Structure formats: C-alpha cells, structure tokens
Image 1 (cartoon, rainbow, N blue to C red):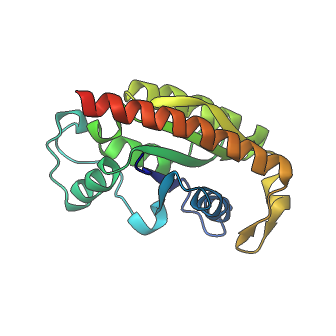
Image 2 (tube, rainbow, N blue to C red):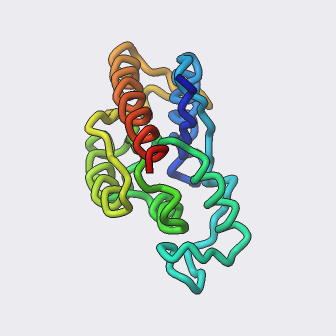
Image 3 (cartoon, one colour):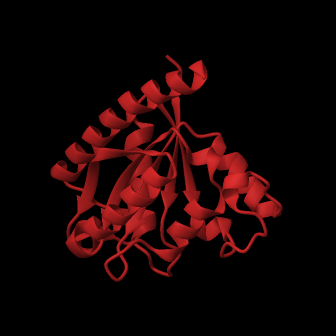
Length: 189
C-alpha cells in the first residue's frame, strides 16, 4: 500500500513557541514509520494573511497567490496532524485562519490533534473538532494532550517521555486506518 501523505501543521507563530519543538518531535516519530510520507507546514513560514479574499473559500474561486499555493499544498495531503496550542481557552487565531483560507482541499480526510497549553490543550481540541467536522474533515478520537509541555522542552527539542510516545503511536495507528479508508473512498468517487 502506498504511503499516506500527512501534513503536520505548526499552529503557532509566536516567538519562542513550543509548538515547533513539539511538531519536530511528531515529525521525528512519524518519519520513523514506513506508512507515512510526512511534511511539516510551519504557519510562521507560510505567513498567510488574515483571510480577506473576495470569494468564500467554499466556492473554490481562489484569487490570492498565497491562497492558491496553500490550496495546492493542503490538497496534496491525505491527512493532517494539527499541533495546537491553547490560547485563552481556545485555538490559536493563526490556526483557525489557516483552516479558513481554503475549503474543499481539507474535506474527506482525517485530522488528528497534538495539543498543549492549559488542560493539555483540551479546549483548543474541542473547538477544532467542531470546526474540522463542519469542514467535512474526519476528526479522530485519538489525540495527544501534553500536560506541562514546557517542562519537557530543552531548547529546540521536545523531550517526550514513554507515555507521550505511546499516545503518539496510538494516534498514528488511528490516522493510518482512517487515512487509508478515506483515501480509498475518495478514489472510488
């Protein structure tokens, strides 16, 4: 079976963000598995403008150069892992904007969450589940909630323990099953 193309989105652009070391940990672990072809999408590098295009993304009439490039990159993936910080009891604005910039490219694909912040990012994931389901994505039940993530940071490295690694492995297993099932269904359309 062909590898699943998985985009890992870094859901923060803040200076000194912990989301990037966490995303690098996710990339390291998913890269060690043979079933996935992962790609890191750092929203700080994409620098997507706050959505202000004239056409609703649901129309598919993308006019902005960055919007079209983002659509191409998102559309190429078979599934997603959102590294989601929790800001003020919710998802980050930059992550919501990245989701809102395009529409159909996200649909009928699995999305998983690796969250951090207050309560392990649970409130961020709660909001993201609602938003991604409304966008016709398939939010997975497996999620990794990193309690006290700052204590596991060592500069640019995230030093996860055995429990975090086990939870991430379970997330990958679920992502693999749903990713293959939904890819087969999309190919059958």
